[in-house]
Structure formats: C-alpha cells, structure tokens
Image 1 (cartoon, one colour):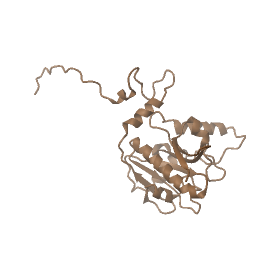
Image 2 (spheres, one colour):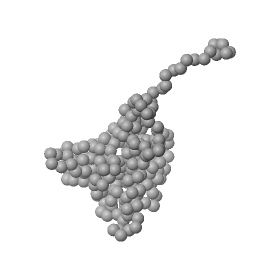
Image 3 (cartoon, helix red, strand yellow):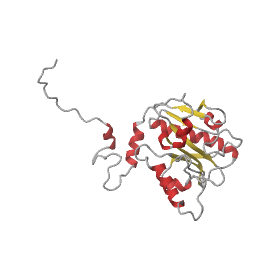
Image 4 (spheres, helix red, strand yellow):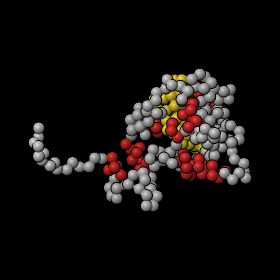
Length: 250
C-alpha cells in the first residue's frame, strides 16, 4: 500500500484527475451525473465543445468552493521521487446531480430531509491489490471532510456488475468497508448510506474564508472584515447598553 496524500481539488489539480476505468471516458469532461442526458465519452479531438465541456466541468467542481468547499478530492501516491494522482472522488449536494436525484426517487423509504450529499464517482488506478485499500482511504477522507462541513449523511449508488471498478461510483464492497450500509435497492442497483455526526467544525468554515479571494469589487461569499480575524464573522457583536423599557420591566 503506497503512502497517500488526500487533497481537495483545486484549479492546479484538475488536470491531475486520473483516467477512469471505463474505456473512452474522461473525468475532466464527463457530465453524466450533472445532466440527465449527459455522457462519459471524451469529445472528439476536433469537437468544438471539447474545451467548453472541460471548462464547465471545472467550474461545477469548484463553483461552491468559497461557500461550502470543493466537490472533489484526489489521492496522490507519494514517495521520495514522485507524487502521482491515483484516486479521484466526486461528491456534492444532491441538488448538484440530477441523475443521482432520479435514482434516489425510486426509493421513497429513504429519508427526505435534510437531503444527503452524494458520492457520484470513485475511481482508483494502479495495481489491483492497491485499488480497494486506496478507495477505502479516499472514501474515509471524503466523509471526514464532509463531517467537518456539518453534513449529516452521505449516499452512493454503486452498480452490481462483474467488473465493479468499471462504473464511475466504484465497488459496493469498498463502500461497505468504509462504513456505508446498504439501505435500499437490490444488489444490481443499491443505495449505500453513511451517517455522519453533523457537527460543523468552525475551523473548517474559517479555513474556507481565509482561502477564498473574492473577485475585484465583489464581496461574495461574505464581506471579510477590513481588520482583525475572519473568525469575527462567526462571533456575536458585543452587547450594547439597554434602553429603559417605558412600559416597565413586567
């Protein structure tokens, strides 16, 4: 098992996403989960929308970074001479992935509120004996990150097929080993779910604010205080003097 470094996706890591197991697919242009009519196939070399699809995919994965964090995580194999991305997980709120919503709608027994976040893609390259352990560690890293953000539950929809790493969600056995439970569906189209604590880590949100740099002239996602600590955004203002109640204290 190689040494792994788990890193939330940013602009610099987008091109590092490893090729998925499915032939002819490419994560950097796939919109299978984001569109009901989406696909995994790589655009032709001369396709006019090839660059546009890659740009849109990057924007989708990073769109909410300043507000709720990146929607993807990379696993890098590291040693004394190299650092290579061998694993990729994509995740996000259910609202970001219409295809996941249609799958979930088949199972009315699943809790409706609050809506879970979903892991749509789990892909690992490298030697077969390293794929499952890497996938488990990557899934645990994703769940730990979402737990820090205050998410209460994570779901995934792996497919029961002879080659379990071929579909984008990865193998059901890896989810089971990472603490997910089979809560709905059959072995062919199951729903796996892992409950989280739902306790927001204030430091996680503070880190997001420190990392975010609003566009010039734009105060999104929140106006940072001109001086002092960004954590001041999460502190109540000092209590001011109270005015006397003209109707008495009763």
